[in-house]
Length: 152
Image (cartoon, rainbow, N blue to C red):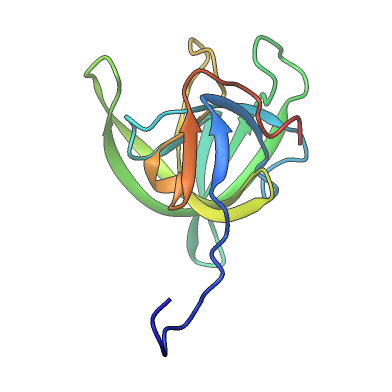
């Protein structure tokens, strides 16, 4: 180390597989199986019965989600302020207008505030898709591994 250099402690990277258990503590207490998708910029949560409203003069959205895939129970009623509306292009190339909310994502020991788009993912294998923006920096993805963080 050069004279006068400052040594800093850097956190080890978060190592994850291509699918992991995650939590959205602002929305529900249930763990949600998530697919890590670096090909997607934004993240998406399965939402249905989406209803827009106003609370205190601010635009809000109320929606329901099934955190467990292939099961109708539990059914969680969620609400959050609307952050934005965006056109999102799905993997099949179809463009769809979606509502964007801001919420906390817990992945392993890390908690980050992330943007989530609301989409009906009933036909998809995962209720939660975690894109590049939500992962942030200092994350290593092992594409041949799953559940490296355990069930949260």
